[in-house]
Image (cartoon, rainbow, N blue to C red):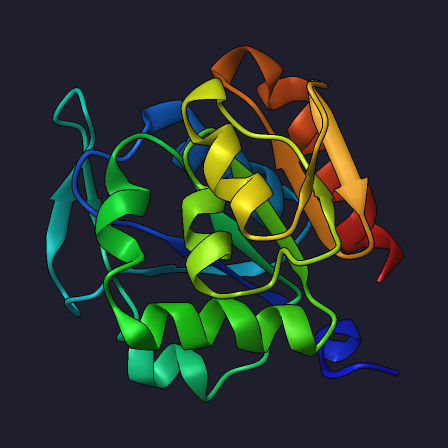
Length: 176
């Protein structure tokens, strides 16, 4: 049994200019499953604003998150992923959850973080059209579908695909 299988906790990454629905919808769905959900940003205790200004406070320092086991990690889109991928500890956290068998759920520009965490080589993924070249250059196979599941990675394109993405994420977490 992987470490992620016994974890009853999930992690959602946050940074300025995140996409509202891509952060809050999966956060609420994971809480519905009974998981504790940590909001992890590069700076502990900081409140980050979405593209529309909606606040999300980081409640768990990255260092503390690295010491925990997570059933899932969510990388929302917006412009936040371009900022998140610049933090080595955030990338270590994504890779750790992935390597421990936790679900890695990412949407829109979120796969930028997966590219930088170096977990996409040989995987099938989808993303927003603007970063297709990046995921291909990272060694992934791009599929233009509303949701793509490959092993423990579930990806999606844009906010309109959130229902399919969220269903797949919830199913995967529930199965582990």
